[in-house]
Length: 108
Image 1: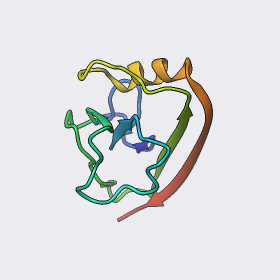
Image 2 (image 1 turned 60 degrees about the vertical axis):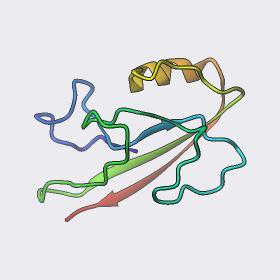
Image 3 (image 1 turned 90 degrees about the vertical axis):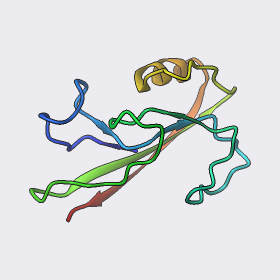
Image 4 (image 1 turned 180 degrees about the vertical axis):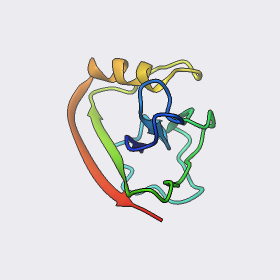
């Protein structure tokens, strides 16, 4: 889940605040329950440099868009545990079958 509306002053150099970066979700998994992530799912650092979900917390200035992106791949990915989101995006391009996105809008 990422937030392209985070202020440039706090967003990383690519201008998007990453709240959650996960991959290798089996096609058989139909939901992600709080606190119950399957051991096969890999988690990369978010923009807080933590391997976990960080919820939305926009400043009071305006609503933010939150992008949930899902990619169907033809294989599992083998990435270093310290890989970046950019490393993930490059790796998945070689195995991409389809992609989808859901955009939610949230404000305080």
